[in-house]
Image 1 (tube, one colour):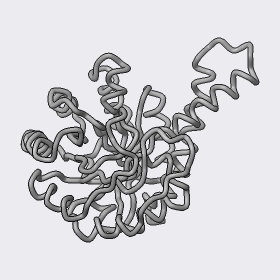
Image 2 (cartoon, helix red, strand yellow; image 1 turned 90 degrees about the horizontal axis):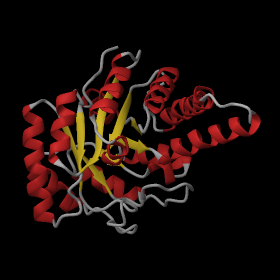
Image 3 (cartoon, helix red, strand yellow; image 1 turned 180 degrees about the vertical axis):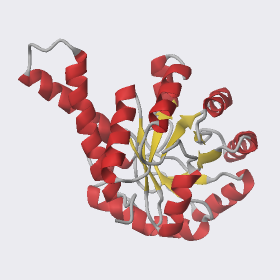
Image 4 (tube, helix red, strand yellow; image 1 turned 45 degrees about the horizontal axis):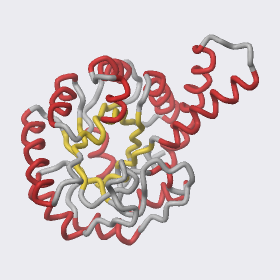
Length: 280
């Protein structure tokens, strides 16, 4: 199954009322695990590299090319997405590497500045056939900039989409990034109102903090792309700790990282079913 455009996953899911699972990659083992989980679930999946992950690696090229190659080798549809990019130069580099979509985050700017910066990125990406997600309102917990209580206004969201031409919109409905406990209270009524007002697919960031039953409910209410990162990192780290505690003699990182990769694959397969990434 070749690498696919992000809209080939998100578009059909939105039209069918299903979810599209999007999972963040830090190391190549994350990408391998996410694809393995998607293959187990027989569901499409989106691999995401964030600007923070790029900063961790020091550059996009090596990890970006690796993620694209993992996607190309998959037996299910896999898209590759640049997450929370704030620099247009990084967006252009991702497009050049074959990423199918980018999330350009200008939410730290005043509204007019956000619109202008995002519209410019959209025009450039669309010229290369690349899909763009953006953010209006604020999702909590990102670098201390966003207020956890922020909520996206449906009328403003519709106007923002019209002004920028974005292909998907990340909305603030009660989640926060980097949550390690599932205590987020998601506003399902607001999701339904946003779905009625906004003509493009809606995206939920900070989904690791959402109670698992609500992961299904948010999709049923109208969200399509569901981003999950911290939950997988918890599973990854726990598996390494458990393996090293049980095998203190181990020094070969392939053995304990393999355990982490397997743990993440199991979680991805389970989560894809919760977000209704497949009709079965």
